[in-house]
Image (cartoon, rainbow, N blue to C red; front, side, top):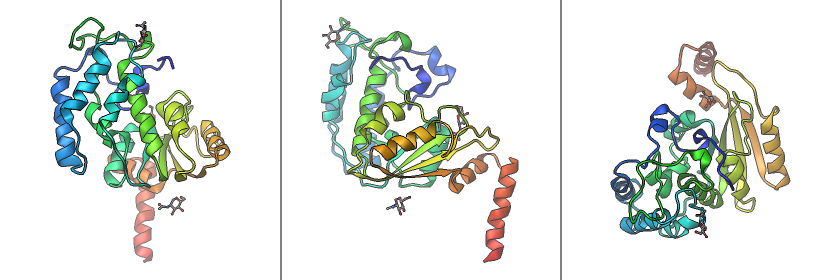
Length: 279
Ligand SMILES: *[C@@H]1O[C@H](CO)[C@@H](O)[C@H](O)[C@H]1NC(C)=O
Ligand SMILES: *[C@@H]1O[C@H](CO)[C@@H](O)[C@H](O)[C@H]1NC(C)=O
Ligand SMILES: *[C@@H]1O[C@H](CO)[C@@H](O)[C@H](O)[C@H]1NC(C)=O
């Protein structure tokens, strides 16, 4: 697949200008990745035993000897092989264009597991890199424009990580979509182009879609409007059980916590209070 997406479509990279200004390999990337790896296996998830140095070696192998616009998903095969993983069912959280809210949601509903909680997602979150065929073992200080690359090394890694994450998903999975934008379900997003196609109806009990709009609107798409209807059709035709919820209460409350003065939050607070006094 050719890499036509702007940087903002990458699932885990922040969009701000900070990254645009600095599109070279993240300084000290080796120390960051290996350090995060040790952090992961010792503190975050001690049940995993990985060889962190080996993971880095496989990563370098995939990236440094390739021309920088020609790193495919397959090139990372050996690296992912060094990071076997499994996770209990009912915890998988997918999202698109809801990054900030997803973070608060996952922090509050502690059992959710996102791509950033997987070992590779954890190690490479927010990092940038590219190598060069003849550069020996070094990564480049300045990487090519994303749009000029056929197979951008950063995109290929996330694509592979997303695919593995979706293939592992089992039980109930949750999908968080943004009802305040057109094309909330975007076939070019990582969810629409990789994850959805790799969910297995044999392993997944329910796909629970949650559509959430910004507190101050606009309300453009919903379970019965826009591209989300297409998503539900796809789920139906592939034999998934699914539910779809507009403006789930937990998600609205989470937004209100960050912006309590919104008029819609007053109603929310009032109905919560009413719930208390009715008891
Ligand atoms: C891309 O990589 C493949 C295999 O790794 C190689 O056969 C091909 O020549 C490379 N293409 C370019 C343009 O470097
Ligand atoms: C929906 O997308 C817009 C535009 O990207 C963003 O500003 C907003 O925070 C998103 N809303 C939610 C609930 O994630
Ligand atoms: C899975 O989702 C369905 C539909 O939302 C729900 O009825 C069921 O209780 C959920 N099961 C678990 C284990 O969360």
